[in-house]
Image (cartoon, rainbow, N blue to C red; front, side):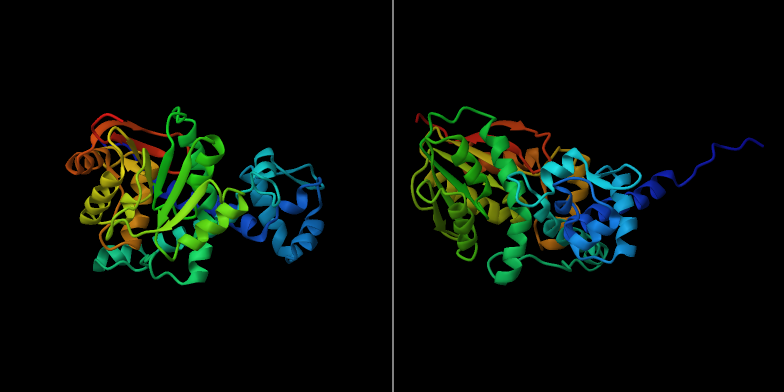
Length: 337
């Protein structure tokens, strides 16, 4: 009797084990174990004292951080890796350690996605309009640096020197607008987002010293007009949190506010038409399944259909190697500028 090849649960077990390095990173970020090492190597006991953690429990975490490449160990003392030194030390301009807030929220959400799928009712739910102020602060503190990074990706993707007025629709914390303002001093920028979010954006803009360059305009682009006239518009991360009808309404309002010939950049997570790639987006989509009643990550084809329905000319799709949802679809309002 001929037997077939032996099948083992290799994929299952590797996926099950894949979460532990991520959780080690999360714990290190939440406890801020990297900042005490900014001036050089320390022993486990010295790190625990600086971080005010239990020495016995801290050592296994430090070992795990060495194993995943965020720390180094010489046999006596621990030191930051080059990447940790650049991005996880508080007080540096490249610090992104506050993103642990976003990681924890997202991972906690996805843990309940099976119940959402079983019942059809989102188990977490996100309501940006009625979000409590402390929850809103935590949310945007966790996502600000990725918005800033996405803005930097956009800023270097094209020559924006001929444009004068940019509107960042659903601009959240203002990170993208700040990046564009820093890169292109010719731009006067408006961040249009919900009234509850506007003070958050204003605070980050003030901290960046860009109050004279970036205006914050409380706006619900789904239910009302977008005030002003612009020669470039950006919508980042908005499509995946809106229903199809809300997307149509928002695009209609943006279309009316743009001058003829003006480009629209729709940025964020954009699936290929197969819906199974990129892998990170296909799996990240479960977060949106769990957080929103009728919103998910959409495909290139869906973006194109909605844009053309609103009157835009589809131009291209630009994938990004970045992890900060910096993919974009470029469309244009017909006519001459």
